[in-house]
Length: 605
Ligand code: F6R
Image (spheres, rainbow, N blue to C red):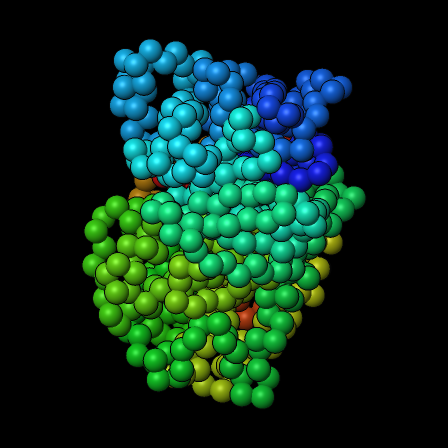
């Protein structure tokens, strides 16, 4: 949600900032801007639109070895040139870029206006520029000016600040919105996401909430809001610059869908024990006795992460026979949840930065809950906050819609369910069945990807429907939810998911030749029940696309995929739905990787 990048060093900042912003554009893309300091002059350029529009608007000469840049996802004020970041004070001395929301912006603005400050934008961020400028006059350093100004600010922020009067340094601060420092050779970087840094350095340092840093070409130091120095250990990021390219695919989304045989293999790598038919999940930091002690599992995450959590809850109940359920973290955190000592809490997040999920984890920890994470981004805020967990190793996910991380999360849940099951009553024979099933997944995904042409033709023939219904029963229901989510977010076709069993309790009234249904019909013990539902839809002249392991006369079209163990089938059933949504979105000429109104990593409330 919005992207920040900052540079200080011997090179010209602008090209580095533009390159970084391009890498971050998936986090927000309604306007972009940058500011550089040359000598003691501050120059800014900002535009409504994409980073490419900013690049096109850059003057030929925009020199300066210190700078900050931003790509925006609007919260306060419409997308416009004026509301784009950086924001500056009246003397154009201080420039600020900001991710997050300043909750007391209106009050601060009133006070500043009463003192004669004239605002140029409608944003909450601009108050920061004016506040810091005022404090800068009274303090001997920019770091103190920023630190003291932030004392009157309530809200969340990741910020980067430069001062034309103090060239050679940039100050960054974090409170609820990520900031990561990149350490180069006689140059320093900062960004809201390692994606912007990876082309220049793999040595990074994550700031914690309440921490600030001063970056100069020859190094950095970090400190708290009370000016106490903090010690930081850099760590090496193992994602490579190539992970952030489309790799010859037309879209990141298609690339990420196609990567799934390898990404699932990486999630499984070293974790399936064929000798004892168990899962090795060393990152949980739990011995067998503790693993046995939980009487319930509660899973939290947002959006697609939550749907993968629903698949996880089903897997845990089936394989470990522990009551498990999933809930949106965005709801959980607001309802003063009852936190039980014998419940294992599992937080899911691809980015590891989703604010609602992070806040839910923090609430759980305040109440003494035992929280583990299933996270993709190594070293991210949620990964640092939890007591242990499972990394997905799916590599960076750039397209806004989640695909490979969704699948890898479901796979990680299968491993967790196996682990929890085998210290309880899951027999070695069943453990072996699941281990073998897990090992078959990468090849089976490969086979599903080969259905691309068939799925593309089907997507093209359904894409113009005014809406679509997705139905599934028990294991199939979270799959239906994720299928509807993918379709609506990237194609903007209205899509609704229902448990197949609930159709007759109301939504059947919607069924007509104009509203097609995608039905998830695995070959499991509920097959006959599902086929009966298809019959009911057909009797109302509803068109049906069935996803399953065989064709059925009740359906107009069928996508037949390889079968695994019934418990693991939901992992595979989602893949054709990803391709279906992708091709529908392409057929409708949507901006597949950057759907309207959305952004990757929702780091605001
Ligand atoms: C949907 C999608 C979102 C995310 C959600 C959580 O395709 O990408 O629904 O799943 O915003 O994001 P993470 O997993 O980063 O916490």
